[in-house]
Image (cartoon, rainbow, N blue to C red; front, top):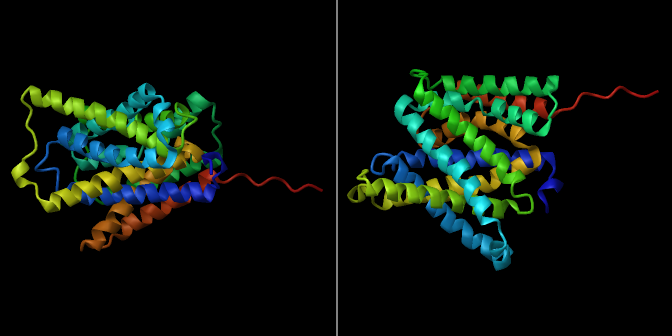
Length: 302
């Protein structure tokens, strides 16, 4: 089934699932951030995801699909969407902390809608604006529960650059690779991101940058890397790109602001307390998603 034939319910469900599986990767990342520096960790994560997706792509669509794919374009888009965005996010979190990064991430729907208005001529409607505002408010409410300090400056600028690169790269994945399936788009761009970040990590190591602490890595960390890579990015990207192909980056990005609630669910399952404020924030985000996609009622004809 082509993406354009997908129902809005299915597209929104895939987007919701993409946020859920992305959230699953975050607790797993906690086991890896200490022993593995950010750039090598990013390269390992994307490399493992690409190694998992490419054989699946080959098995499903055949060698011809890989041979005729626009590899140059795919590598460029993947380097922007996953490589550059991931690197800037790590820099931002290192400088400012997770709270600032999370709050700035809540602006993704605004960026997505703005991109569509500028590049696609999308018209702003009252319901669309209301939906975006509700999504933003719900996301900020959910993020506010973990706020210990919000910082502006270079770190915040890097966080904004990361969100901008990922949002614009997601749109380019769909519009720049129009004849490919979601699986092909994700596999191609993931390979491009893996190539770029691996080259960057090797170059950094050549100049003396610290590498992974291999002695601190065991079976637990290997399992965490598998979840972080195969679920938190590989599966997430397939679901995300499939939904963006139908909904557009503006509407799909509204779901991003419910991510803190999904993270809280997995932390709750791991023993942490339930947070009703984040649950309320997710409910507000959900209302914003519904309102943004609703259409004004047409007047009844005589």
